[in-house]
Image 1 (cartoon, rainbow, N blue to C red):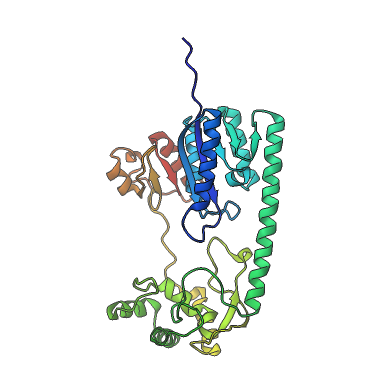
Image 2 (image 1 turned 180 degrees about the vertical axis):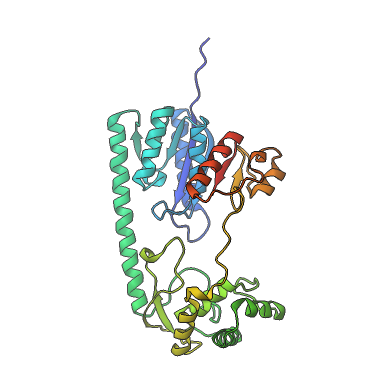
Length: 350
């Protein structure tokens, strides 16, 4: 008796922006993808949703990485998505999928049309669609960047995110109860007091951030270095980012909202707080191999950070790493981490 092999399908759904947070976009994608699997007679083994995550921006996509791991372990026979651009807008990532298709016989199906990665023509179509998606993403990013610059030059309020400390929810009206603390912090900083000292004092007095949590020096530094509190608008293009948002942006105009402190005091604060010699602690780096590393065992939803947490959660899984010192060469350290992680059955994310 011949047993027919059931194709194990993984559905990948993604939406770049979910402003309402309801996940309706990926829900619609999943519904269409499930219908496609039903028509093909494929068994859906899992759904991998990356909600409110842009592929073009390079931001981490946890479910995408999980999908690649499961494909590599032979747990998935086919990937189903709404369109190739939902899978990725990166030609480099698309080539990873094509390589997996070659090695694992992976099938790719999209609601918008069939793509056979087993044939040269199918791979060409996938690459063309991927290139077109990348082209559109780059043009969209350029348009949005120009719009943000134009809004900054007009002094308009930037959209998105939480309100700034010192201002009401409309981001235009000064919240006097908080503004007094901003002026106090500015005055104390300019007279030589450390941000850490001010934060400790505020914690004792019950002064909290807009999120209701105690102040930290890093958060206070950003508030005091911001041109916003002096009633000015600054612009920080993405091209100037090096992993994280720079402390200072370019001041391009007076803002449409009033300032809490003077331009002169703001300029002095910005110069002071951006001075690299002011920072006394630059971090000690990693001492042990798993310091700050997230560890996950296959098919286990739990995640541990660091060697101790991982050892407690999965005894013996990281025993080989205990007491191992970090190499002075990052590439060597990462190679050792990945090699030992693979040997022990862990997936590690530096």
